[in-house]
Amino acid sequence: MVRQLIPFPAMCLPATAAKNHFAVLMGQLISDYGVHISMTFSSNPDQSQRVVIIENPHNGLAGVLMITDEESCIAFSGEDRQTFIRPPDHPIGEINKDTET
Figure (cartoon, rainbow, N blue to C red):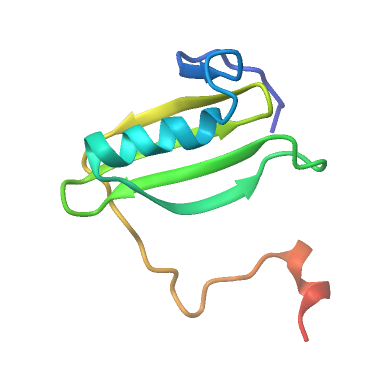
Protein backbone atom coordinates (compact mmCIF):
# COMPACT_ATOMS: atom_id res chain seq x y z
CA MET A 1 0.00 0.00 0.00
CA VAL A 2 0.96 3.62 -0.48
CA ARG A 3 0.10 6.25 2.12
CA GLN A 4 -1.88 9.10 0.52
CA LEU A 5 -3.54 12.29 1.69
CA ILE A 6 -6.92 12.45 -0.02
CA PRO A 7 -9.03 15.60 0.24
CA PHE A 8 -12.73 15.18 0.82
CA PRO A 9 -15.49 17.62 1.71
CA ALA A 10 -16.47 17.87 5.36
CA MET A 11 -18.81 20.01 7.47
CA CYS A 12 -17.04 21.30 10.59
CA LEU A 13 -17.98 23.11 13.79
CA PRO A 14 -14.86 24.92 15.02
CA ALA A 15 -14.01 25.55 18.66
CA THR A 16 -14.24 29.27 17.90
CA ALA A 17 -18.00 28.81 17.29
CA ALA A 18 -18.62 26.60 20.33
CA LYS A 19 -16.11 25.71 23.04
CA ASN A 20 -17.81 22.33 23.53
CA HIS A 21 -18.11 21.82 19.75
CA PHE A 22 -18.50 18.03 19.86
CA ALA A 23 -21.33 18.15 22.42
CA VAL A 24 -23.12 20.85 20.42
CA LEU A 25 -22.76 18.93 17.14
CA MET A 26 -23.82 15.60 18.65
CA GLY A 27 -26.78 17.20 20.41
CA GLN A 28 -28.07 18.55 17.13
CA LEU A 29 -27.46 15.28 15.26
CA ILE A 30 -29.36 13.39 17.95
CA SER A 31 -32.22 15.87 17.86
CA ASP A 32 -32.47 16.14 14.07
CA TYR A 33 -31.57 12.62 12.93
CA GLY A 34 -31.99 10.39 16.00
CA VAL A 35 -28.46 9.01 15.69
CA HIS A 36 -26.42 7.53 18.52
CA ILE A 37 -22.70 6.89 18.90
CA SER A 38 -22.01 3.28 18.02
CA MET A 39 -18.19 3.30 18.07
CA THR A 40 -15.22 5.56 18.78
CA PHE A 41 -11.50 5.09 18.27
CA SER A 42 -8.30 7.12 18.21
CA SER A 43 -6.89 7.74 14.77
CA ASN A 44 -3.36 8.62 15.89
CA PRO A 45 -0.99 7.50 18.67
CA ASP A 46 -1.33 10.60 20.87
CA GLN A 47 -5.14 10.37 20.74
CA SER A 48 -5.49 13.99 19.63
CA GLN A 49 -7.78 12.86 16.80
CA ARG A 50 -10.81 10.73 17.58
CA VAL A 51 -13.17 9.11 15.10
CA VAL A 52 -16.82 8.60 15.98
CA ILE A 53 -19.21 6.34 14.09
CA ILE A 54 -22.85 7.41 14.45
CA GLU A 55 -25.94 5.58 13.28
CA ASN A 56 -29.70 5.31 13.43
CA PRO A 57 -30.66 1.69 12.77
CA HIS A 58 -34.36 2.62 12.43
CA ASN A 59 -33.95 4.67 9.27
CA GLY A 60 -30.56 3.48 7.93
CA LEU A 61 -28.62 6.72 8.51
CA ALA A 62 -24.93 6.57 9.43
CA GLY A 63 -21.99 8.92 9.59
CA VAL A 64 -18.33 9.34 10.47
CA LEU A 65 -17.09 12.25 12.57
CA MET A 66 -13.54 13.42 13.24
CA ILE A 67 -12.91 15.24 16.51
CA THR A 68 -9.88 17.31 17.50
CA ASP A 69 -9.42 20.04 20.10
CA GLU A 70 -9.96 22.60 17.34
CA GLU A 71 -13.10 21.23 15.66
CA SER A 72 -15.66 18.48 15.16
CA CYS A 73 -16.33 17.50 11.55
CA ILE A 74 -18.79 15.28 9.75
CA ALA A 75 -16.50 13.56 7.28
CA PHE A 76 -18.97 11.12 5.74
CA SER A 77 -22.70 10.57 6.11
CA GLY A 78 -25.27 8.61 4.21
CA GLU A 79 -28.16 6.20 4.10
CA ASP A 80 -28.62 2.44 3.65
CA ARG A 81 -26.58 1.47 6.72
CA GLN A 82 -25.52 -2.19 6.70
CA THR A 83 -24.01 -4.23 9.52
CA PHE A 84 -22.03 -7.42 9.32
CA ILE A 85 -21.22 -10.17 11.83
CA ARG A 86 -17.61 -11.30 12.03
CA PRO A 87 -17.40 -15.03 11.17
CA PRO A 88 -16.27 -17.14 14.14
CA ASP A 89 -13.36 -18.64 12.17
CA HIS A 90 -12.13 -15.28 10.87
CA PRO A 91 -8.38 -14.69 11.46
CA ILE A 92 -7.45 -12.25 14.23
CA GLY A 93 -4.43 -11.02 12.29
CA GLU A 94 -0.74 -11.74 12.62
CA ILE A 95 -0.04 -8.50 14.56
CA ASN A 96 -2.54 -9.48 17.27
CA LYS A 97 -1.22 -13.01 17.85
CA ASP A 98 1.28 -11.91 20.51
CA THR A 99 -1.56 -10.45 22.63
CA GLU A 100 -3.48 -13.73 22.92
CA THR A 101 -3.82 -15.12 26.45
